[in-house]
Image (cartoon, rainbow, N blue to C red; front, side, top):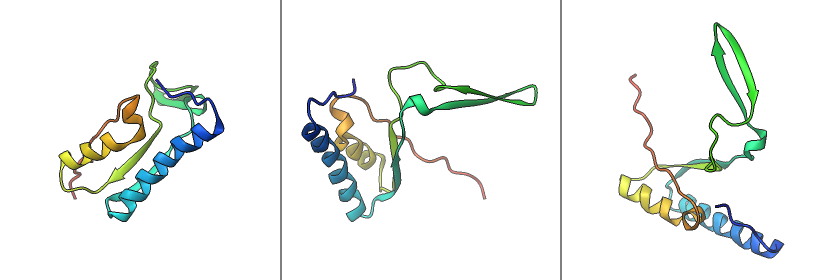
Length: 106
């Protein structure tokens, strides 16, 4: 469940947790990039059928869990990536997915 804030101060405190985490991994040199994403109400889904692009409003999957943003980090191990994921504010009320980048030839 996404947290509901009963005041602007509570929401600002929550955002402070995100800024603090981001600053930590910037200073450690582990952050490569990351961005928050707008809500699913802004999503469009694109597919191609019979050579024609079909654009529909909304996310690809009907789900309660959505991608809210991402961090790309350069760490020495999967264990470290999982440790960082456990430090994200969303770990307290949701789930954080950890995936390595795919190695591409060339």
